[in-house]
Length: 258
Image (cartoon, one colour):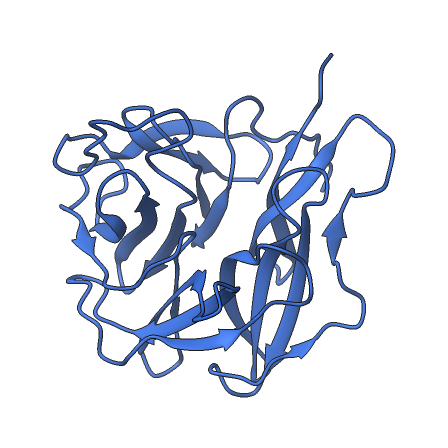
């Protein structure tokens, strides 16, 4: 497959992607802007069309008092059993929440808020149908860490306590956690290094979703840090498997201008 980057130019940070059959859907952050969380559609991962927004009502997206770079932080988009789920953080009002819909072209539900702090939440369904909610947060020593719980994605009600599962792979500010499962391993992919020029993606794996996690010896798996060139700050990525079994990664990047 031939493609040209960026696949979606302009103000489209923190991408998250999922596939439903032959269709790919992608969402991005919107911060203090309304409506919130645009949804893009593609058949080939190359040509993308803006088809909707997840948050189109004041009740879904309260932004009163939100300053620049407030509001909606990184979303995650997932599909499970005929339903689309989007989870994100409103850092200005309410914290982490989940919305859902059966019709990605239609209206989304009212927010179901989750009693777990941090930012950059993500959802993962295990083989037995258990839904996990993962985000970053601070431990008792103010160290940024990754936390996990089981919950009902429709209501946001937690079924288990929030548990610390990882301190990352050594980079500062571990965030944007996404969990995937392949060949019996749980893979925890993170953005680390901050969202500036040290930005990078790392990955670790475990046989148990709660860990302990083994760091990939080849980390970072994606970074443009310490390299020249027009594209910088690559990171905050999400993986998707296509119909042919190939894996693709979407990420943010910047093109610095004088």
